[in-house]
Image (cartoon, rainbow, N blue to C red; front, side):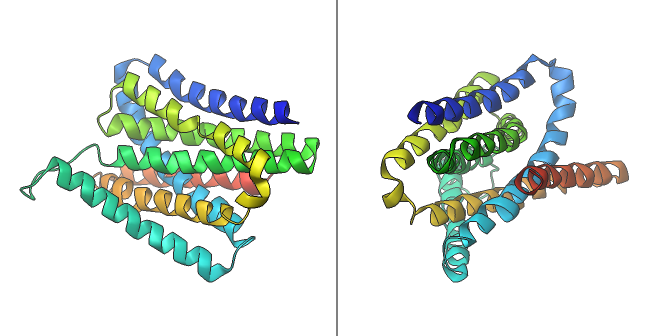
Length: 245
């Protein structure tokens, strides 16, 4: 059983990061066109993962007030963290920090992947078929999300090499989550809804505070329709893999 859990946890990380790494193969001119599209798509996947996946899952195992309060506290926490990032880079109040979304997306994704590991382990401990089904669902929704996260890191000023390394480190939190859940599932079960809520808060904050304002800078009719369709496609992708499988 432990081998199943380790294999599928690693498979999820490798496949999702590998898909993001393929982005590096495109010429710079094509990446320049694709990045704004992927930012729109990533906004949808972040909101979809938070509202259609993590928050509903948390509500199944904890009171609604506790989950919603944790989400609210998480949004305030990430607001403070972002202020600290801004303060560290700028003290005159007039500069603009382009890399502020990068650290937050990595933190939020690490939380999310850690919880994915817990989900995979819990499913396998219930039954092998359920574990395989859960693993495939995790892999399926992580691939578009990791590609979108990689685009965000590039848009935030990270080099391709640094974005790939950091994205890999963030994705690798799936395995520790799975191993901790395997050995201490009883002790971990009470914390999972709140881990989900904090992860959801980070995704909501990144989408609404960092990504959507950037999308509003493009005001032409074609750009607006492209952004809306890609955002809805991101939400729809998460909806399919959370509720269609």
